[in-house]
Length: 263
Image (cartoon, rainbow, N blue to C red; front, side, top):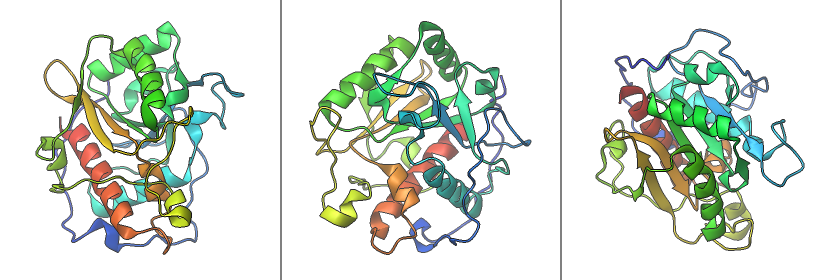
């Protein structure tokens, strides 16, 4: 399995929130179901079956919301602010492909709509236990949580979920993150409301920073519940979206990536 960890040397900088992206030529609309160029790190979006929707695995299903803009903006931040080798463009992690095991880190959203076959659940289980890392984001309320956990229990039936504390190592591998707050989607610009409601109308008022660990204690699933970090990355260069939200969203994901690449 190609999940080897290498030493990472990080650039010093003052604040993630102080940079702005250039509009011209910043979007990468192509995506790949296999690594396109040699790279230490691949930004990878999890492609899954959409439950009770109009789509299955195709682009336009729940897995692809905000893709590629949010992913591309975060990849730009990674390249600017760290020395993690990441020349590859965006990639899509297909559970049916053996290239899944080329990706050390995978991002997924809308888990209230995900569904796995038994074989897909087994492959994601093997990926995580062999050293892979999954970050999940953008699902809200109790109903969405229950549907997320239904899929997660197919994958990891015996691993507990825990709340992460500010002092956990994952919040200090790159940035020292001692305060976390709810990171809203772009609806905040219109409404001033930080929370969103789930697919059943139940709203996620309180942000949950959670994780599932491997038997050796390594975090293998980082859970951002009642938040929308992807929107914070995507709208970071818009004056109406507050820097405090995008700044925290970038610091969190860069910590998660650094942790995944060193543990």
